[in-house]
Length: 280
Image 1 (cartoon, helix red, strand yellow):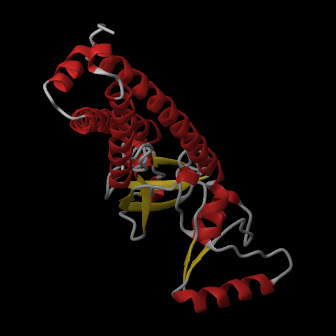
Image 2 (cartoon, helix red, strand yellow):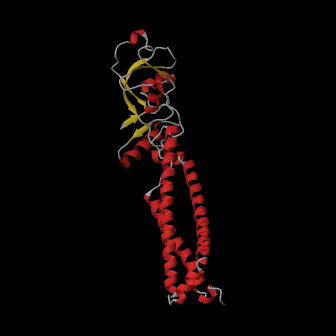
Image 3 (tube, one colour):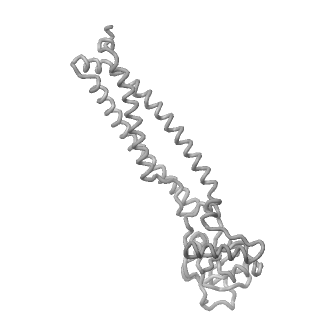
């Protein structure tokens, strides 16, 4: 069982050599891993020597940077600006709280080991409370779940409004082709053939519109991700266009386009050709 301690870095870390105490000029043997955001802000690189101290100019532990880590795509931490990850003894020295901790994470292997670890931690002392990481993720992502439902509601309203708008447009467009439909009917073309041609045309237009809309959605999602990933410096994707969404949009547009085209075509197909020509 491996213990991982995550903590807030409240210390000021200065680069060598100008910020190092006189007695700390040798290359230290101990290394630390720092957040990539700290490396960018402080101009640090792997191999640099730094001093971990609670205050500027104070004596501290001299270490060298052994690795630079990138933050994970965790929605619960996207808005946090802290630099994280310290050795336990460094954390104790900086916070001066001794052996007390607010939170620690334990990695386990398998559900059985997880259950035993939860039971052991809960029984260790009064006030100890163990939570599974997936339960914590659900609780901290509650805001994102609300936003997701809100977006789903907006999507339903948008689809309904667009379907009504599509039907109105097709009714107007098909109505403008009264003379064409009447000529086809007088030539002996059946009603079913006229309706099929209009439905196929409407479905093709709907599919073409869906492809253009998918391209626009991909472009918008890319711009959103580029902007907010730069703002929050996280690999988290804020807007995602999945194959499932594209498939659903294509199928829905095809069904709505065909249905609207059929309604518009049936309206004219039931009329007598002479009525369509205005002769009766």
